Amino acid sequence: MSANKELVKFIKEARRRGFDDYQIMNPLLKHGWPRDEVEKAFASLKPKYKFKNRVCVFLDSQLLKKLERRAKRNVLLLHEQIEDILRRSALSSGKKTAKEEKLDDKLVALFSRKCRKK
Image (cartoon, rainbow, N blue to C red; front, side, top):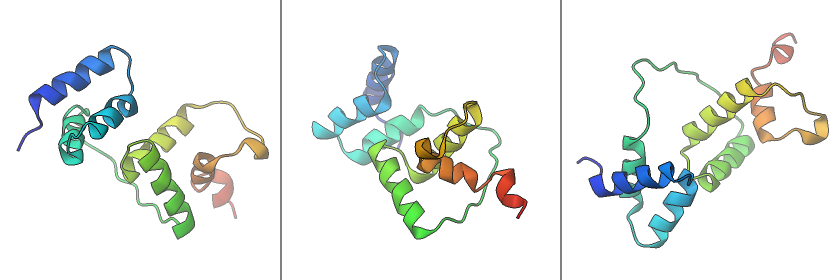
């Protein structure tokens, strides 16, 4: 079954008007749209990758729970949240102090060269 064409059209128009996905999805769900139908419509709008690299990451359960909560809050799947964190960290150039470090930075630190030198 394909995504609802009217719903896809609505999402495209809302994005064109400057609304982010959370601002679009949340009211749809509150007004009774089935979550699976809404998610299917958003998924149909994601770019299709011909080749996609895979990365396997082992996380402790506490970090995994935090990432799952953040993904839910951002209306993302867990793997989408992790991809977003990695993408943003690759694009950011500023260094942060220890006080400013966030969960995203802790995840990125797992992949840092400093950790591998041990």
